[in-house]
Image 1: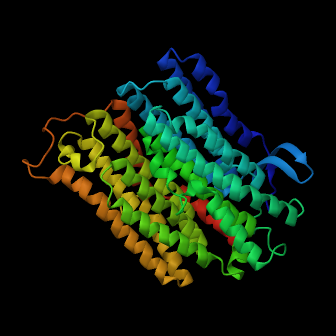
Image 2: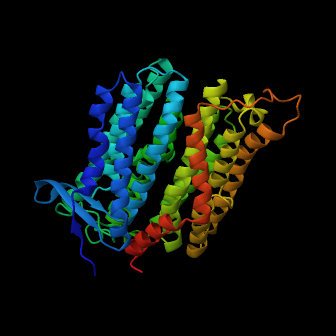
Length: 495
């Protein structure tokens, strides 16, 4: 049995982007140097995360206690397989999103770009803090930090629509976290005499009864509202008023994935999979997630605004992740964690494409995009590839995570959930494929675009091409994320 090691590296990972704010601000009047500082911080952060990967794959955990507040309460960091999987996704996509941002922000001549890059960096610091939190208290602090850091990004345009979306965003996230998560955390602290550290098999068993467990489970599930479970989902479509780089990284990766990541942490590290199974609580969460999947997919089908369609699609895809863990089976849990990565690469590609279309043509409604494949062939090809991943069709990485989720429903005998997943995939195809089809195969007289090729800024096109390529590579080589997800599942389920 390999012992855990003490290292400052996870703290340093969080500090890198936080420290990058200073040079970003100081170099605000020199855009090339300012954005250079963003890239340097991004590569350092990603390099530090990758440097810990061999240790985690070898079965060793990395720990560091930053501040022991009370004998049983601390701000502490711990890197394990689940945290490493999320950190790899967030840190790698920050680099690509920074590249995309250069093209998007300059192409549209956006104002306050220095503020944008500064809060972007703070948000990534909070995201990695959540990934590497060793206990519920530390996770809660970074969760709240992320909510506050992303508010200036959501309201970046500073018009009436942005302010309204920002108020909705902050109201939902702070009300649920303070009203649900905080009381639940205090109750757990008192019931367990200060036990808040995440444990592979959970730590609540023996401390609370079935009714208390159900109430706590619901409080923590809905309290982490960044996960977008209905009825606490309205903030996500409203936050689409943000610039596309914000929508892409924060609402396809960082913010929303922090929500589902926190829920997975609570299920596995606080309650424990066995405890949830003994009380048969997974079924309740499965139906809540299943309802969100179907309803959000149906709503997405009705949206003409492309970013809003992507937003409702995201709400459903997030619930795939929650459903997978709620199945309480090895295949379900593995598929759940893999979907964090597979959905991130596919959905960020789609958001990148939406932003590129808006930058190049000013169009944001699907009905205005007939024939756009003739003008923007690279962008719309990438859109098609991203769609394949989100739907879960071979040649894109999303196939594997959905495959394991389907196996999980069969493994536990929840065939109603199997039908929900398959129905949702058909709805995914119904709201994505017509966009790509009409972009390339419309009649000449129906096309709204000329035949000449005119893509968005080269940096934006390069970024969406990279993420589209990554989704295809993940179909051929899903091993890194599969290995981490499978190892985490073994730890959670003791097999």
